[in-house]
Image 1 (tube, rainbow, N blue to C red):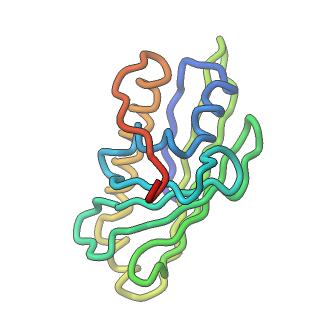
Image 2: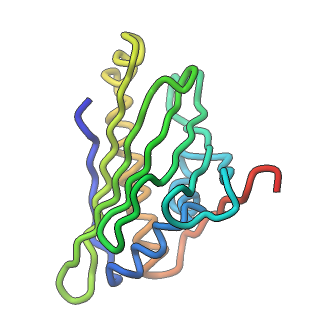
Image 3: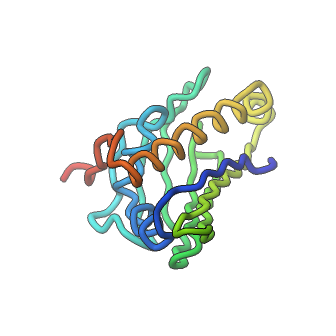
Length: 164
């Protein structure tokens, strides 16, 4: 499917935004309104290979667990995470954070999410509003990210290692 894209300008230097995003343990702080029960998949939560499992609180979803791992961390430009979720982890996802410098020390952050539904029912769920729902939730997540980095407000709880 076509990617869902949202973007925002954060009033912080690109390197600072990148350093925050490259630690996957920070992601629940700005996404916990729709991604819950975060557990890291390894102790080192920073950089390539860092991963987490979490529950997606999407409407009409019976199989809500998803796992992601950072597969490309290109300082200070881009972070790419690959994941799988849904029934039998059959739905692939690819999430990309792209950071561009903006005037006066600000950063343009673009979040792009692509999914690869496998069955007809998976395609149908996406077409019946799941894409709009993800766009709305990720737009809110980026606003929370901006609030955390600029004002230090709206922080959620950081993820911890599963069983640790």
